[in-house]
Amino acid sequence: MTKKFIATFFLTLCVNAFLFIPNLYAQDSVSVDWNKTVFVSKTTPTLQVVENPMVRPSSPIHENTFKALKNLGADYVRYVPWFPYPKMAVAELKPPTKTETFWDFTYLDSTMEALMNATSGHSVVINFSTTPAWMWKTDAPVQYPDDAYQVSWNYNQGTVLRDTTAKEVAGYYARLLSWYTKGGFTDELGKYHKSNHFYKIPYWEVLNEPDFEHSISPQLYAKMYDAIVGAMKKISPSTKFIGMSLAFNARPEHFEYFLNHKNHQPGIPLDGISYHFYGTRSYNNEPLEEYQYAFFDKADAFLEKVRFIESIRKRLSPKTITTINEIGTIIGSATGEDIPAVYWNLSGAMYAYVFLELTKMGIDVAGESQLVGYPTQYPDVSMMDWKTGKPNSRYWILKLLKDNFGPGDRLVATAAHGDFYCQAFSTAKGKKILFINPRNKQEKISLPFDVKDATIQYVDEQTGENPVAREQLTEKSITLQPYEVAVVEMK
Image 1 (cartoon, rainbow, N blue to C red):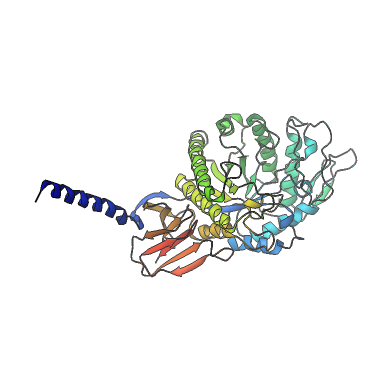
Image 2: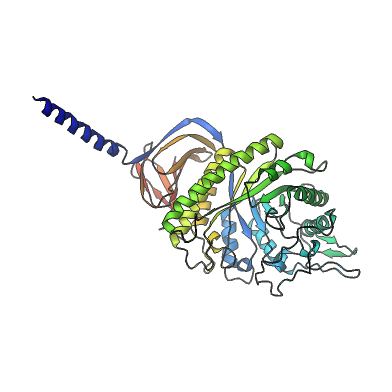
């Protein structure tokens, strides 16, 4: 045997071995140690409902919308009447005179009633986020459309309150809360207005994105929060209050100031904080194929900010809960006609990933945004088809998560070997593994157990607007479709 032959032989052997190595891992896998608990979940998956014409009683999808909300059965449902529709968001659009006040709940009451009925038995977070424009100093009175359903993006004007003590705005919110929890209120002139509403409101969130709306500084926001909460606590002592609701989560000075109890009046509770995240494109006209990277990269960047914010919260106010109550994706669609069906699956998969990572960090609430969006109201964040009233994949992914996971679940040691995310949970209803495919390709995954009596629930592009699919497993592997979210359950 010549040296040349031996060298050739060993070279061939090495090449074949190298080529064989990928085949060992051609099928991805997951390993689980069910006896090793790494964390106990505190996290509730939920959503927000934003007031707009498509959720109104006159809307053709009104009935389906609130049926979907009821069927979801979620807690911490956030409800936000918002400034683009002033008549649907503000109860006192004109300042009182010496002889007259202008309280009007014509539009506010009907959607509030539908929401409270649909969430009966579950907790809600109410946020009438828009303050009357006349309470702010402006160069001229702020105009708004006579048509309640006409969008108006110019209502939130002014950066300085006309009553710098914030007592005026606090009085507005105290009366608003009294209207919905005490059956009515007494107005500025001493006249009583009867509502017959006696709702239980466990949580109230104070304003929305104040760092964006009115450009409110941390100092002014804390002053307004204290005045509003102090007045509302007298009306409903059992209600808890969530503060901040920030649009921009990269400003530590907001968290440092608000969470420091020294910056608040004695007795003012800091029950919770909230802030928001939306995955966006990396650049204009970015092709859909690249969204899968942009969304998840930005989700990872956001999660790093969450870890930093949590360190501030734990240091300054450890008993304050964290609710990240707007999680979604925005691609700048104006009409919604340019949104392909698979986008809803990708967006839902990103939410599932953020929910999973927030669970690992002990965040209390992970709220998806939003139940109904439509042209002029961010169609790309909708969880419903605004034409047919059918829930899309974003809704069904949330329902899949809500029906399978929640506070008290034990996260056990899990390792994923492949281009996917997964986490095993030991729940009161059995052992379950959450799988998330973040990519536009199939992923075949070997399972770490015998498939006897195992089932899979899943949402993929094929399920579309249909409910979560469920199948009995017959093989010791699963194949995730592009952007699929699935739960494998063992009995």
